Length: 428
Image (tube, rainbow, N blue to C red; front, side, top):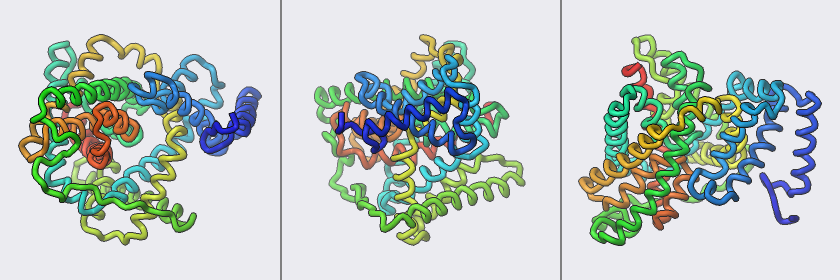
């Protein structure tokens, strides 16, 4: 018991803090604003995240802690386990307090600036077409099958195809819901309740298909490089990332400023472009501006490293809190229960299957092994980001493909946000 730590805190101390939080909630004296919200979300988020990461089946096939935090938070509200004042405090913190935007800015800016520049540029030439093939065929198939099942084309694309291919929750479904909210005028919490089931099921199917692709490679050896993506001996697409060490706590402050500055830049560009009648969410412009800055090498290495360090700090310490906050503030358990129909499950499977075929076919055309392309550009687009990448690569026994899986999760998710910004106004 002494060796067990949650959020880096010894179990005994964690239970004391948990008890304090529970009593404060029960007595209605949990501090208002970010103080109480941070305490509740971090403690209970860490607890639910730990439960999800050690629970069999859940940790292997359903996304682990992230899913438990989201559905656990939604269940706490749905079953009225937590007081309404706590729900209100967390909801205000997530929405009006800007914690969601704060997290996403760190995630997008730090993850892209933290990539190797040469890998980013070279991957765009040969790898991004594979992602395009995966996304294109997945969206095409879900629109066709959705129409056969009586679902509108726009609805099947927006609420099933796009969220599954969006790169998970924090970098996918969450910013996508904000894009939808801006374009459609529908509250983000209503949209999230329709996106979450698709993301969770898509992740489960991606892991299962990862194992099946490994077996296919064993049966048909010519389709696989056994962990090698490029058919030729080209070394240009190998990962060259180096470990970034934090020089001091000041690096976190620098990284925070860089991330929020890029978010502000995205907002400025969105405002100027909106004057022409084109309404694209600031997230999309932030992604474009960060990717361009990284590709051109105009950001000094010191600031890139600081942004990357800040991103890793935020992702490592606040992800559980964010996922729980999403469950409380943005996820309606009642709507989720209604969404889980046989037709819905079939359409989710169709999306993942389309991603596999699209990535595999395009991958072969650009000189990649079909199975490796299908796993990285297909399944790692359809899973839940970082945790999904690990699960899919473990299931397919190809952990050496992690650099390309990360490109799918980082840039692929950003690509989907751009697509959502363009397609939503068209179909709705």
